[in-house]
Length: 293
Image (tube, rainbow, N blue to C red; front, side, top):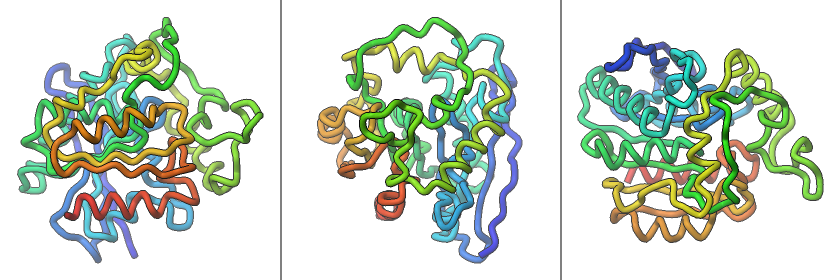
């Protein structure tokens, strides 16, 4: 199949910062369905379109009739940057997403669409789902950051910078080794290499703003997502080999989220389950089923 991808011009309404929004679709299978995908703290929208075998998330949903929209949050990737890294908070990022959702609705002639967030993206999309549910059909959270997963750690610098350990931190590691040894029983080496290359190429030219990281790392036993404030159904997908996730909180969250919400607990999966070789197909099939219901 042939796929199309183009940039859509978008700016923040308050300060005029450029937002890098892209539209990805398959002309042969296009239908009037839309989903916006949102990245996490470190990696930008390229993680949803790694062109290795059938791993591209964009291609999977495009061939199933979706126009896939992706956003580099302000301060990240190809979007405009800020001199103050603390400015890019979860709320600030959620506002980016609201601007993008409004633009997509305008362009596509629809009232609402689906929204997917990975990692920190679960926090940012949760705010959208509580503040602007009128723009949303359903929400998907991959590797949700609820808090309570590790001890509080101070974040004192406004920016972080890439190194190899930082780039591969979302992958599972060989038990008993340090964080520099990826477990290639869980991810294909070629895909892993492309991930590293893309991250350095797309996200290595500037510091990562630490506003969101400060919230995550310093929360300790607190909650990062107000599940009771969310006003649309949510699909939570998580693994039990994920450093960032407190599994017990996933089960608690499912009970507190709106009717129709679901939890998929993938035993053995890690933070990047949507690209892990034993879980990527199950993950995307579950998402498609949920947003199609």
